[in-house]
Length: 341
Image (cartoon, rainbow, N blue to C red; front, side):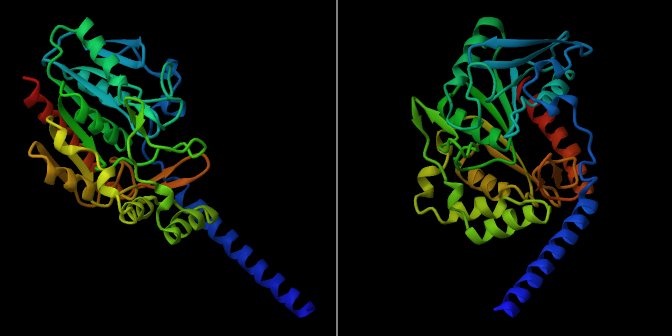
């Protein structure tokens, strides 16, 4: 018995030593992963005071109209008809930087919070699509040339706005970055449910808790233990594949009348955005897809996102992601110019 206990002790000690060494190595390897400077407001995306409002050539104001919470950018010299609405992703930001860049090029834009603000869901779960009606009401009340309405969104935001376009024909154009063709579960695991609701009902969703357990252990649990980047892609993919009713969880793409431009990185490590973009493209005659070799879920960075308590693998390499960022921004601007003449 003593020999067994002694052997067990040394095995456990050896495993602990291996984990310790690997964690130290990963801390050194990934310590400078966030090699792209992020704006100050990403430290607390809900803190309105962190967002700059003194922007040359553009009037910026915060809009508080029911569930419409966000920033309006009005160029002093508006060059294009209509408006461009910008949404962020699961991080909860309003995609302020995209709205700012486009406003400085002559588009009237909005950077809009999807959740987490006044009159909204506190977390990304059961977000009502009817929030868009407050946006439409505000546009109708305040802007003379409100048509066309284009929307830019990424990741979970792209999932959100594709659903919006299936319900609201007022939306003329969509730019979907790292899109989803399915409705997935919300990201509040203490209040688990669909990401979205419509008319008080949860939209059917893919349950990501039912993804491959082996993938979960390997790509999330083990990676967390050794402080390596977590990858969610296999979890999302296996959850879709294991759902025998997955067709019912698809966003009703055939109901979308808007023109669609999709942007996807071939090496996306968050979810299989390229495959889901192709699903959307195959069902919509109004959809165009641009894919970028060597690029991941987030362009401009090196494929690893360092957060306070974890590292997330977003995919791609620095050179390819930077190239994809430059080329996709140009493609988006040209698409919007064509639609907002």
